[in-house]
Image (cartoon, rainbow, N blue to C red):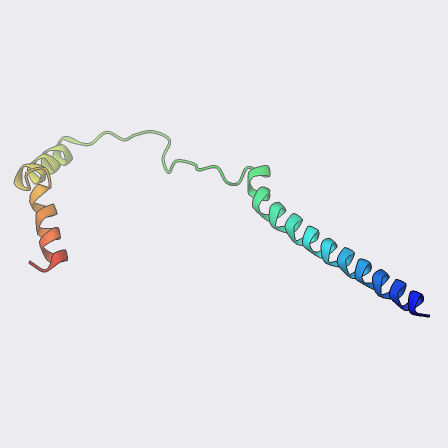
Length: 88
């Protein structure tokens, strides 16, 4: 009688362990599939917003050049930002 009960308990433990392994394998495969799906379907590639560069107009070049000269190539803006950030 004791041997039968022991055998039954051992069987239940094996079945429970197998069921737990199936659950873990299924979850792992689901996560792996969710991660791999965009790469397989090629939906993860980055596409540029525009196909070609559009050159700046002369007015835009002059405006940017004047702003860069006025701020010493943005150094003064950086210093002002740091001063505000650190509370000077």
